[in-house]
Image (cartoon, rainbow, N blue to C red):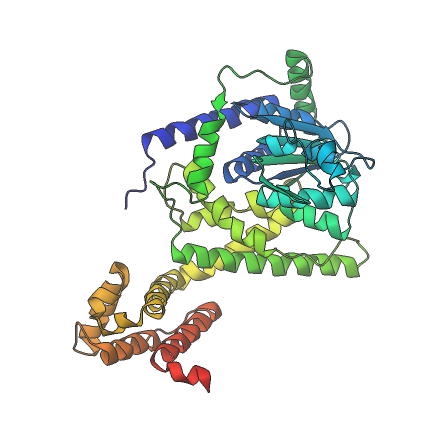
Length: 434
């Protein structure tokens, strides 16, 4: 497979990388946050910036938005008195008289590709709850009104985080999170002062802007919606990513629980939601594309703090690095990635057989994908003295091939057991009804 980017995608990546470098020159010592915000744009997700007053949250968001042309931008300062129509547009009074809630969405968040909501947690829970569907599903669903929203990415800013059942749901919609601390190092204070004087406290005007359509094209590719090109994620990378996520979650929860026991405060009930877990694939594809590849590699998993860790919270990044390094070293030293590759390719074979049982009658050379076919056939000839086989021989071949793998890790052992169970179920379908 050709993993090189097509020319128009490569040009778009260059434009995004140049834009990131430009913003980094304006927003001093904010590289980690800027990478996070651009990754959110590439994956069509939302960003939360938490910081004290005067740190430059709105300046950073406006500087990034200024790098694009052709997008509508919605800006709002949240307050407790606001109602949903502040974000969705005024209610149609004639429709309201008929008992129908219909918003005039022109110029609203629903009608905008980019959004900035300052002091988002000042909004009341009723309004925040109304925003959830728009942020997550990109739809306005209110009363009888159900219309698509143009929302691509919203940046929420806050001086504090208010914790309620509703705000926790809102936080989960903002997958990319950053805590922005004021700089006190003399060098960075000097550089910030330089930029303030140069741009009079405002944004730096880029010499060349990126068409928002270009960003949308990259986002479609990264999220798997491009009909012509695909950014592939090998099965073993996907499996390994989930192992790292689980280990990171366990270590971070353990660290926070221990700190809470010692009176250090904090919330020990940390977990990675299924939504975040699913979106890691988009982040991995964004990392690959920004490194000019159409295939994700094992090395890309090390860069997942861009999504999983709150920028500015050192503990999270350090624990992620420890979780990743432990598993990567173990799987590399034990050749566990090779076993993962073979077993997960076999999982693909089993999935296709479950979808179409008639495949059991085909020779194994046609049943298996190319990488598995080579390993299966080589093993079959050495151990069984056969090549292409019928249904019963296929069962024997698959079973003995898997049983011949001596798992190098607990996760591979559990995967092997699951595959054996699925093969048994394929050949003994009636047992499921007993």
